[in-house]
Length: 148
Image 1 (tube, rainbow, N blue to C red):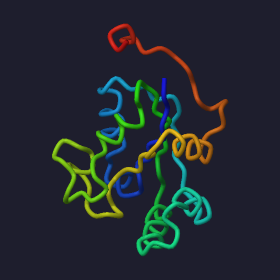
Image 2: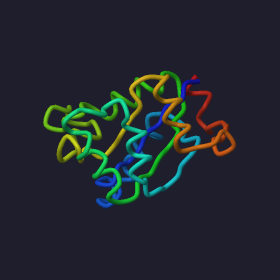
Image 3: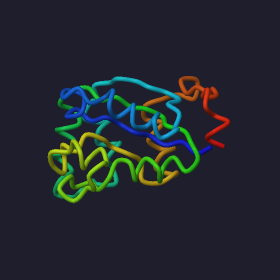
């Protein structure tokens, strides 16, 4: 099973959307293997978004993601990276499809509710920024036989 990182960003946390985001993940049949609320320091945010360093929106993204707590989750399932990316929708909420998290709740390019890893390689790098392997749990969902 593949794993990915999903983060409910500060705008999602302060708007009370954490439960809705996690509900959608679990309703899709994915498993939450780790969960943590943290208030990111500037250095941590810069490391998370390092691939965007030098782009015009980098500073605003770092300021936003450090403005209130985030909730990070390791999400596990078949094709988890791609499944979560489709559930999240386009980075620009004005272009995100209705029914996606960003399409339904996103406010702007920066305040778009969630971050989701864009590849299995990015997922593994990002997971390590938030969780040790001991904090990631392996268990079977009660409906696992229907998800196979």
